[in-house]
Amino acid sequence: MQQAEAQRNGERTAVIREIRATMAEFGITAADLDPGRASLALATGRTVAVKYRNAATGETWTGRGRMPRWLTAEVAKGRTKEEFAL
Image (tube, rainbow, N blue to C red; front, top):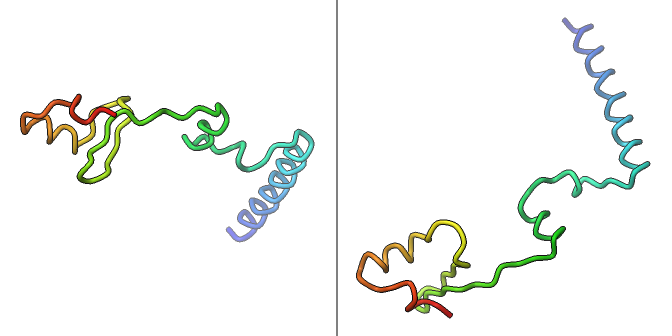
């Protein structure tokens, strides 16, 4: 069992060395491998402007995606989302 684990660790070390060499060859950084939304926003250079703001709490919404809970609650109270438009 220890021999198998030692062999696996040796293979892992070799693979990591190969990955690092390939990354260096192509100028790839760890940030390039991150599929997160932040990296996508930075890559495209686009940001979405805020379209709705709750003046009482400072909460905002861009108008994209599902309506946030704070705005849904206000609409349920009888207000319109246009009242919060900027």
